[in-house]
Image 1 (cartoon, protein in one colour):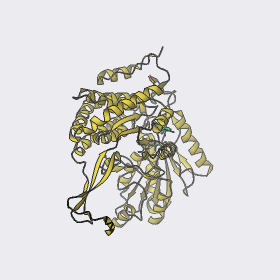
Image 2 (cartoon, protein in one colour; image 1 turned 30 degrees about the horizontal axis):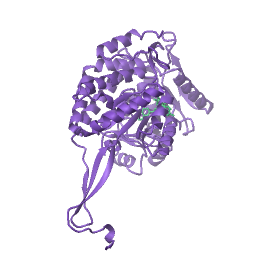
Image 3 (spheres, helix red, strand yellow; image 1 turned 45 degrees about the horizontal axis):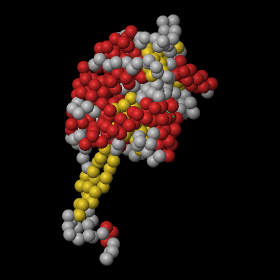
Length: 507
Ligand code: NAD
């Protein structure tokens, strides 16, 4: 007998009006645990192989009619989904907090990101435009037109259990595609909840379009099956660089389109002219927010020698007093790590730093008496004279490495030395320094900010990074083009047939 779901889970699903899937007769199960106290939240059925096949058949059956629906009508359904998310924002935010351990403000913020991308998709549904290009041939015109791509697969990570899928699904759907989602095995409940709400909207439409969105619960193996399925021609995968390397190679074997959103090792450059009050707040939020478990978390800081000592002193004070605790309680700023393995990885990185002679402040386990089944840590500061190998890898925990610099180009080189290329920022009041950092001579990351931290991107801009971050772009700007097939059309409206490049071919 599968144990009943946790009472808080039952209550949240009752409030949002979504049913939990039955485990009767199910084979494999995924277990959802709350990082808050280690309690089991629910067991959910892993999708069996034969169900994957029938799920893809449903996607294939539904997608052509969905693509025929005018894009603004697809946008209208996303508008309705956004309204439903607004209505259930409080319950969904609580669920995100319960299953990921992020503080309630951040849980609610993640649901807000879903609402924002729905709004964006509604506008986009009337803006899926191409180009008219000057032709070299007389009485000809060239066009660039955009068409639905087909079936898109989304694989998502535990730390953004609802927003990342929404970024992908909202755009992919409005572009006329069908979407199948394999969420993290650590956050299946969030997936069931937000996907269940989308299905409500799609099934209530006339005609019903429920089948254009499918959910596959499971582990890495189910993700691999999604990537290998020949009918899923586009895979958007968010997670570790190791996962992305495997997914990217598997996609390349079948010439699939891959959108890869992978790890980050993000840095801040703090110049001598920086507003230190502003830099301090931005850095602490970016480094300890979500307990250092954002792809855009601040992990490295290069601080000008003129301001290093006062800023590091203030960072230490802030780190000593930052409120760590139950993420559901008001006032908590740092919740738990996702699990004990994340805590072990953090301790291993700190031990390596100590062995190298670095000064480590914080990093210890806390709240073990109150939450013996969970992993709470005090965020750590590591002062290091040079950028070493530990600092150049992504440890998914709240560790901020601190280094001095004296020359801006040296700091930019240190920023760019990481294998990842997701987010970066500079704190400065100098126009020259800000412009240099954001120019081609500056940061080589997909995100380069001035006087704000590395995390907390808005959906209006394209999100993603270079190098080991995978090169994918999602969310705003022209990221929608990744979910569409581009066609170049040349139209001859004359009565002759001039050939391109002036070629003569007279019959
Ligand atoms: P993970 O790589 O362990 O898992 C991510 C997802 O990939 C899960 O759904 C998992 O089941 C699936 N998966 C794992 N191996 C797979 C394979 N071989 N084939 C197909 N699917 C596979 O990552 P995680 O621990 O859940 O998340 C943390 C990582 O994600 C960090 O590195 C973080 O930086 C990164 N991340 C990146 C972004 C971004 O937008 N760049 C956003 C969030 C998280």
